[in-house]
Image (cartoon, rainbow, N blue to C red; front, side):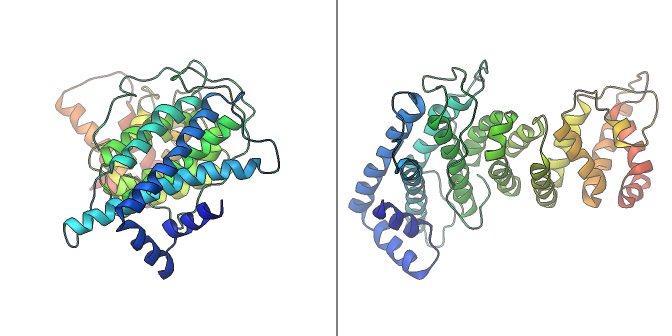
Length: 376
């Protein structure tokens, strides 16, 4: 355990001594190979715990929590070693190069988390979407401090679906699976933050992990890390993967108070990074469950009634957009675009559609900056 702690500090440390030690390790192929082989064994142990929790449980003695820490820590060190090694190789190939692809080791870790760990957390009866097992070709947000994730609270839920052969009942296996996914979000966020490419591959995997957010217990552990991943994607992704990740957030049925605060922070940052992506996604999520009405709304509740099919998270984000100068301006742009298309198609419908009611709501109850945009 002492050796692992030292390795963790070397791989994640920003001080001069850590950087120097890291450089010595990375230029030694033999050393890297030995470390990768040793650390990769932690994945086998973790998979056994996740797959057969009742038979392969962590020790129940005083070192139980430490044992879980060792497994998670080893997987995290393996990921960071892969990250730093590939960055080092890329810079050696081309002086000053600051973009690099997923290494085979990092890709293997991403695939393992998606195909062996995430399915163990899927709710009973959840069906695997087409393409879950496909090898995607080729981003996420940097967590400032790069802190390693702690052991989560043990969940009370005890039954899961059969996403694949590693799906199991619960207990320590479920707790370990949650923390491994959380670590994965941290690692691949850091990967993208320091110049790693392959955003399409990472976002495709992470978007599927987003199906776990409908579970309240899992959401409490994964929500902020998942939201930070979305921010990194919103800043650099050009493949549409960021939208898929954000759509998973908008599908959450509800948020508690701490999560609402987190959602507000995520929205505020994202609308600066990529307002078109953020607001159009919110607009679509609310439009799809609202239908047409006969009168203009004066309040958000009238625009998106509680009894509609719109999730409370999408409605909360719409409220944030209405209150935000940049967000409300973008809402007007999206609604105006919809109205122009409707006019061009010479569509005639009974009642007022969502775009018409959105403009009315903006004029009557939104931020002053939004109303000023309507005439222009």
